[in-house]
Image 1 (tube, rainbow, N blue to C red):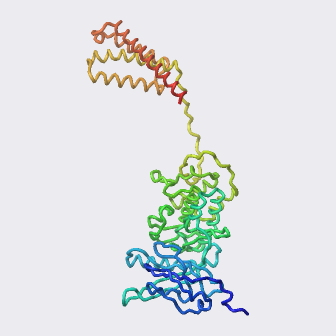
Image 2 (cartoon, helix red, strand yellow):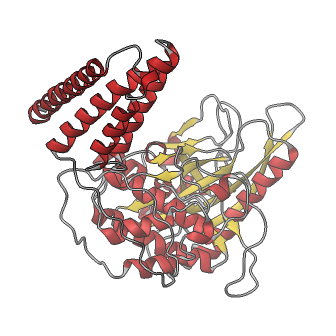
Image 3 (tube, one colour):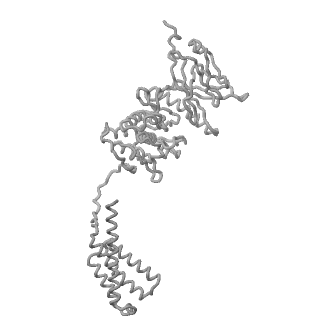
Length: 483
């Protein structure tokens, strides 16, 4: 039987990364650990800059920083007690900022909850990382006479790229690729929700594509465990104020109760950002409180309707479960529409289906026909002639003043509007013009000007109105053809 050391991978000059927050030189190199026997038997190594123990609980060797978040940091590490020095992810509870004791307690509870959920779900679903270890660590503080306490969890390492990185590298996703993401994560969420948990932080950076192509849902740091009283029960309790801006629905941002449909909303936002290549803030119309994403991508009607329903602002208007979404996607399995060469204008978010009730058809109103050229010119002649007569009448009553001119303008404007709305037309025009002429026969009204003079002026006013209308009509036709 061969020795264990001979089967270990050749690591080269071993680097161990210090996990103390704020360490000035976290990289530590130990040439003696190139010897595999020493690597497995070394009792402990300490950071050369701050004195922090480097081999966590005597087993895990952090090698580099993967990233930092609001409540912690993640490190790539190796488990020296496995034959192949298995890679894993070490997450350290490392809250940033000045937190109150209450906030610190909430953050620590979330970290412990993440470990509990991973232990419960990771070993039972292949697309959720498995939990390997969870432990506290007390170390000497850099302040004399004090101790620092840190909490760690160790989980399965998924070797690949998250979808945020993939979007940057390859550009926006096709309909088929977006549908693949939607279906795979729906399958994971179905399992998560059926086990009384809500993820609460679905976004592209938390979905990892393994090198084999399989998608994994990561980062259960914001997970919410719901207490139910059997199938169909309503979750109780309010949400904490933890969410990713742009992806979280209104109920989560307000700190209200969250539901399975909360995750469905965030998943829909994730998918439309992948399909369009745009940030959520560029796709949400805050003025109209709706998502306008359809004009930036090409998808079939079924997928569009499903995503729009998942994006509705009120939880009870969305799908209530991941299974409902999967059922709604079943009628279409492959893209049914070819790509469109011109983008479709953004469409308003559809309202949820409402059970229709029989209604009588609405009354059909007759469509107004367009005005003919004869009607336009005839109306102009009527307006000019009648306006000329009325100008004399108003001057006789009120004299030449601003009031008389204002009244004349209002009357002429009213006649034009009445003709446009077809309130007066046809035989009405000569009748009204005749009435206006009879008014001028009243002696008191024609005392200033003889009747023939008045009629001549009115006829000239009508002719001028016809001429001006004809010129404007001709200019309009020329411009419409040129433009």
